[in-house]
Amino acid sequence: MLTVTDLNKAYEGKTVLTVPKLTVPPGIHYFRGSNGSGKTTFLRIVAGLLPFTGTVLLDNTYDSQRQPVDYRLRVNYAEAEPVYPDFLTARDLTAFVAKAKRAPAGQVDQLADLLGVTAFWTQPTRTYSSGMLKKLSLLLAWLGRPQLVLLDEPLTTLDVETAARLFDFVHQQVRRGVSVWLTSHQDVALTGLPITATWQISTGTIHLTSDAFTG
Ligand SMILES: Nc1ncnc2c1ncn2[C@@H]1O[C@H](COP(=O)(O)OP(=O)(O)OP(=O)(O)O)[C@@H](O)[C@H]1O
Image 1 (cartoon, rainbow, N blue to C red):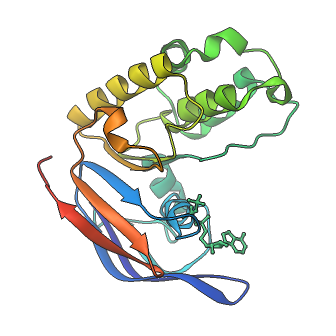
Image 2 (cartoon, rainbow, N blue to C red):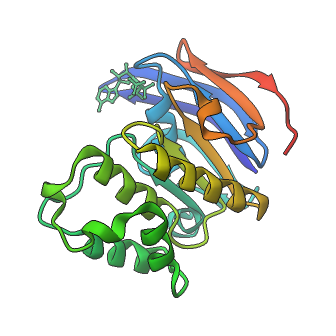
């Protein structure tokens, strides 16, 4: 469903990631790697948020750089450590992203209830704990009708009850055909999700480590 070709990413002239060719089928994909290996860089590239050279193509149709609007309607991303303008509330940010992502009616309320964001809906984000910021970022990542949702470290700072509800919801979405990629320094088995394949990011590139492809 997603193909990466001739990817090269450098920061300040120093290459951190080189991926000659990578094809990731639908399903739940786990990207692991040590600190600084390039997981966030890779997810941000796939999310269409970082400049790079090469091609990222969704479903052999949507090029992240040539058709950024169509592409980003289909690929959503939740940051590992979300940062928002501190005067905005969950309600403000959700309204903005819901419009951009063309969220269907009722979706915002459903997700806000699921993730417990309703409890601090009108508070400015400067008053949020790290877990509250995480819940908001996870809500934003499901808005619209994404085909691929990228979750960077979804387990960190999330309370156990919310995590259970989130991963139950993720599993439902996967059964409906949505693909999910995630990174985690914690045991990914904690998500309870059936992982399609695990990928290792190291020495500046990406390799498949286990190939279940059961999805
Ligand atoms: N804005 C930046 N400017 C310069 N170098 C950067 C920048 N962002 C990341 N890097 C470098 O790119 C490499 C990959 O970083 P990245 O954040 O993608 O790693 P990561 O695998 O997500 O790490 P972690 O597990 O610690 O979150 C690191 O060497 C890092 O120092």
